[in-house]
Length: 80
Image 1 (cartoon, helix red, strand yellow):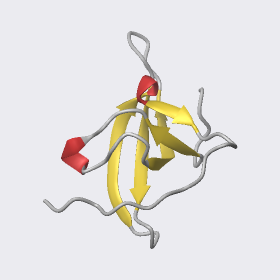
Image 2 (cartoon, rainbow, N blue to C red):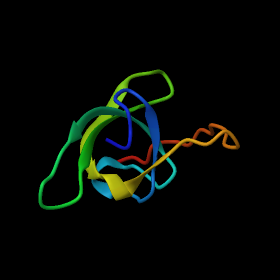
Image 3 (tube, rainbow, N blue to C red):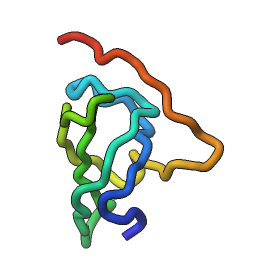
C-alpha cells in the first residue's frame, strides 16, 4: 500500500462528475488491492466546513502525497 488510510492526498486529475479539480485534497478511506491492474483507493472529500461532499474510488496513479512546500487554498464548488 503506497498511501496510508486516513491520510490526505492530492488529486492529479479533474473529476467532473464530482465537481472536483486537479489539486483538490481528499482523505484515503479504503485501499483496493488488484492482482491484474493498478491498485485503487476510496476517497472522501470534504468542504471547508468539514462536511462530506463526495466519496469516490480512483486509481493510485490519480493521486500524489501532500508535500511540505504546499499550502491549502480555497475555491468555490461549481454549481450543478
